[in-house]
Image 1: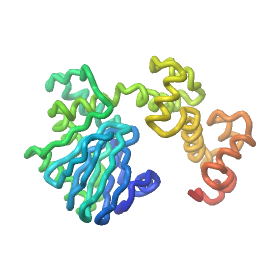
Image 2: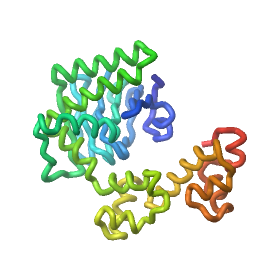
Image 3: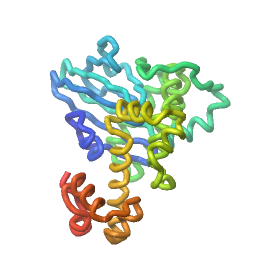
Image 4: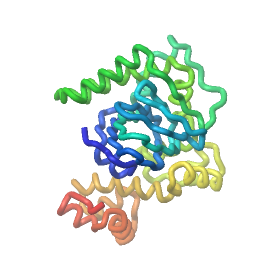
Length: 285
């Protein structure tokens, strides 16, 4: 796996090991490294392979955890971390697919009730159970072995990891809650290809919030206004369409009637025009 030596979202996108249902992130951080870390739109299981971290989750009291413990943080969490010593960490970012797949199959047997109250500042700090320790070790072995079916094996092992986490009440609350968070629902609506032309006010109504409150909460959570987020999504989709479509057809397909406006936005986001992107296949950012 590629080592990530900072908390840049760009580095995470570039160096994550992605499967069908989760991302794996491997961090190698120097002694005294200190920075703000975010979980974005998915719960993250944060583990330490070597070293230790001094952390504060959503402005909680500072605490230290080591490789004998893990933290499960909810989506959109803000975590301040300091490394008292050189630290290697492995983070599991669980997508909707794996959470839904496991939850649908075990909810009845585990009698999982939706959490009645949930604070966005909630997080779970826990020692490994015997089984979660075995699964965590198995993931490390899979990553080291570089089997040609590595991603399949990771997905398979992490299904059981999610199952084990769901058995812990504090972790289950985090895993279940994120699906029903109104901002996460909005993100899924924006991300659906079926909703390419949907307006911000329609999404606000869909999640049961006033437009002003929705816009404020959305930016507070994602760091983007809903309009900025929609623009980024559309432009990201446009890169896929540009592989097979003309610039004009791509603009229309992604909801832009004004071709010049589409080209300006694309160049601002990616440092080149759509036509230049078609010729090179890569952006400058």
